[in-house]
Length: 154
Ligand SMILES: [Zn+2]
Image 1 (spheres, rainbow, N blue to C red):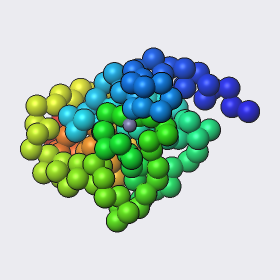
Image 2: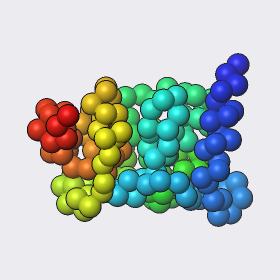
Image 3: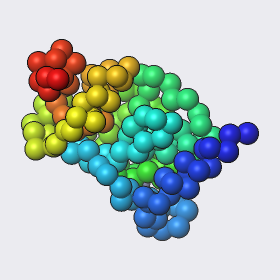
């Protein structure tokens, strides 16, 4: 048994506002990327909150890389495990797919603030630049610039 996951779940639920008990959406009240998705850190890494929710409430399931966690309710800030399912990019026709398309330009994300702490997380992460882009709310070109040391020079 993994006791630590229960602590992570307890901590996770502090950032959740349940709209309609166990059937409605769970609104994320913690920190959010400019893309509208929540952020949650556990096991030393920062995750999109709905992906963290899917993994935590499925007893620490390992997310299949390449699969997206999709919302049946279409609300990006919802982290209700009963509204989430793993889908391939082509199966995912809901809000998340539209969100992905919209966020590729990163135009809305220019105001988001990075810190040295986040830059270091980005540089030490093994996630793809696409994932990092949505996780930190910065455009992919910004992520490339950070990874290549063209911005945020030490
Ligand atoms: Zn929902």
